[in-house]
Length: 123
Image (cartoon, rainbow, N blue to C red):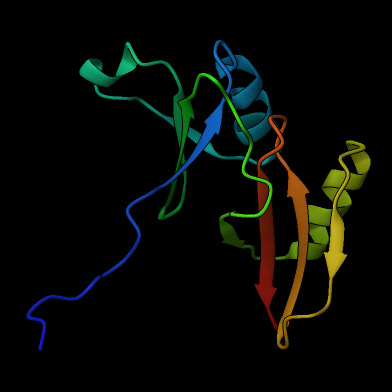
């Protein structure tokens, strides 16, 4: 029997190409409403940018060569997913609705780097 258990996820990290921090800020902060979190000084030299929304921390790390996560993805729980879909439609951001998860309204979208994101609201 193990004497430990996993309590929660501290953060999710997605990769992005070099010098893409401003693009990440425009998407995650500007479009999705995340707040930027200051990275520790020792980690800033690696590049990338960190964000938070409530208890969710999302880190964008720089990877070279860069390959987007096309299947693996974070699943972000949304309050009022219909309002988010309307917001994305107004901004001409593409997403794909999916009704295959019982009890959830959800959709998939890609960040500007091609990383897959799942947005869902339990109903």
